[in-house]
Length: 189
Image 1 (cartoon, one colour):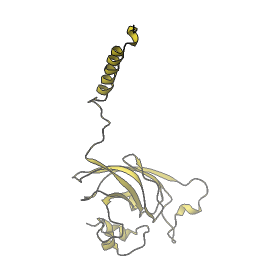
Image 2 (tube, helix red, strand yellow):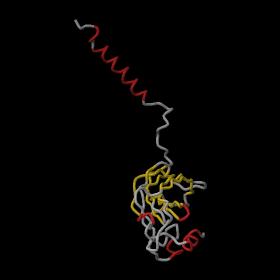
Image 3 (spheres, one colour):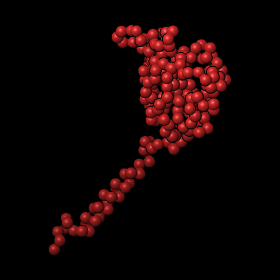
Image 4 (cartoon, one colour):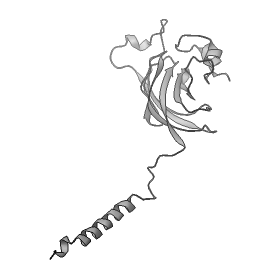
């Protein structure tokens, strides 16, 4: 005689009930953690054309590293960007930069000779993303006067078809802090 607590039919019924409960608990329609199918991960790169070093920056809360004066490139993963560009598309950029008064005659930071902690400035700005057709790398341009431009492109910075038109506006210059005249030419449509 089989005891009623260990009867195979009872175990099977209990197992089926627990399994059904487990399956149904996965069907929570209030789950807001599902990824948005209209968003895609994009690598995040940076270029600094300002006269202050960028210690670190974030795009919509995603860390993007730091970038020295007149340098850039490289990338980190990833910021979520809409698969298709639309009017009014923007991101929030937060950054911490040096506040040393620019560069000296050798294009080196005026912070270089300072002892101890450099003066810093923390900024936050919501900026538009320039129109894009193909989702690829998100490029953050740090410009003089704490201006920021965001491009999403598969073109390198110096490519003739880069959406910034940097090459056609400024020619084949070394990456460096923009002069006032270069910044004015760059910002022209």
